[in-house]
Image (cartoon, rainbow, N blue to C red):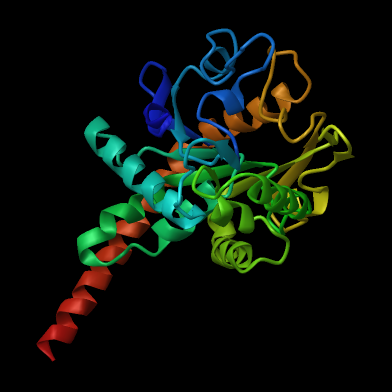
Length: 303
C-alpha cells in the first residue's frame, strides 16, 4: 500500500537531539519489520520500550516496496539505489521542514538502502544539490542488522523459487522484484558496488554489525539467510554481535527484557549521548570544506 511508503515519524521525544532512522529490508515494511508477530509489539514506538530508554530522540521509519513476490499486483521497479535516492530526498525535506538540518542521525538498517543512501549523499557536494550532502554530514552511526555486506547465499534459493513461480503464472499477472533480489546474489555487481561505495566511508561513522544466530525455517529446509561473515565482517573500529533470532525476527523484540534488546538499545543510547558534539564539529568542518570548494570553482571561472 502506497500509504506505507516514504518517511514516517513513529515517535517524538521532548526536545529531540538525534533522529533515529529505521530502514527495513526485503519483503519488509516500515512498521511490520519492527513489530512482533504474535503480540504486535512495535518496539520503536511502544512507550514501554525504546521511548522509555531514549526519550530525547525522534524515531523515523522509511518504507519502500521491497516485496520479493506479489500475486496479482506489481512490485517496485526501483533498484536499491533508486530507493536510496528517495530516502535521502525525503530525509532532507523532512529535516528542513523540522528546522533540524544539522541534527545527528543514527541509521538502524535491515537492508541495503541505508548504506547506499550514505554513499549517495556523500557525493552530493555540487552547488545546486549540496543540501543532499547534509545526510552524510549528520550521520553519526549505523546499526546494521543482517545486512549482507558480502552477498547472501539465500538469494540463490529465492532466485530459483522465482523461476518456478514465473513458469506457473503468466508474467503479466505475477511480478517479482528482480532487481532487488539480484542485488543480494553473492558476488553480484550491484552488491559489490554498494560495498565499494560504503567501505571508504566507514571511518566517518560508528558501525555496529549484528548477525542472526538462528536459521530461518523455509518449510522444507532451515538455512541462514545472511551468514555471520557477510553480516558482520571483522573490520577495524567496528563493533559486532550476534542476536539469538532468525533473519525475519532479529528486528523484533517482545519486551525490554527480550534477548538482544538491551544489546541493540544500549548501542543506540551510547550513540545518542555521543553524537551531538561530534556532529557539531563535523558541520563546522563540512561548512569550511564546501566554502573552499565554491571559492575554487569561482576561481576556475575567472581563469
